Length: 399
Image (cartoon, rainbow, N blue to C red; front, side):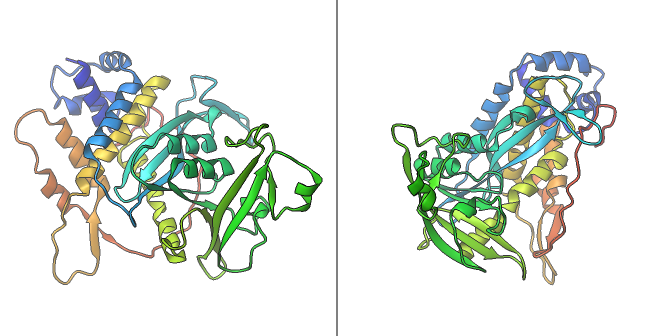
């Protein structure tokens, strides 16, 4: 019977197989397995907000305090999720121009990810046509109500408005920006800077005015045009003092990365900032695991509300699996070459099977996961190949 609880659980346990296969696995290949049509009708009665509420409730009940120098490390990043484009709407569908102009539909996931806990803390789902990373960053910061945190973001999220939203929330930020040699870098209006590595404090008076004095003193004033959103100035109060710390880090012999932060130099050295910046890649890894290990790429719906259901359900499943994996103790052996970690992909399959179990003896989840390990090889680097992604169609399913 497809009641509310059962339907929610099926959506949570769904992998990358076709709907009928997922239903058969969930019902242990019973002759009374509901049809795919019955399941779709049942899940259509549930709003995406139900899964969102479950996601938030699970995070609150299972939160474990893991801090770095007394702060939570919350990385904010976005990821594109292609969806079926046979349904056109103003929110998710855009026209992409290339060799041939084609319609493209996607959701853009803006997520805050706890780097120490390795779980998603919050998410904002935007249609590709309404994509606004700066606005999403500010919204994620404003609605965060936890203990003191450092918000970490990559290029694309930098803006004066975002910086000051973090400051007004009482937290810290560390955001990578384009290097000082880039003509489009936000640092162009904050220089000049020395060559090589540096760690300097910068102060500017932001203003809506554009007088001769302001133009003549670019090292004191920064004009904010009307098309640049800034929530802390208006015509009645056209001045705002902006302070930050600009740090340029040497990554390789000829490569530098620049970050803007409000972290105190007394608390965080350049080495600490470099370490935090490197840890940010944990969210990139999490998106890969979310899409491929958990199966978010292989959606089971065309309707936008049902797709949003699956996004929240997969993120909840990711957090659930990570909570279990983080508690697994890998047995230590003598004379081993590497330090080992749990194989997260194999763990997901084991945990999903445990959740589907309805009767009989439960599988020894912890012992099974502890046997699925991979070596940790620090310092490995590979060139990142960015390829265009398309939706995984319903007639092509794996797993």
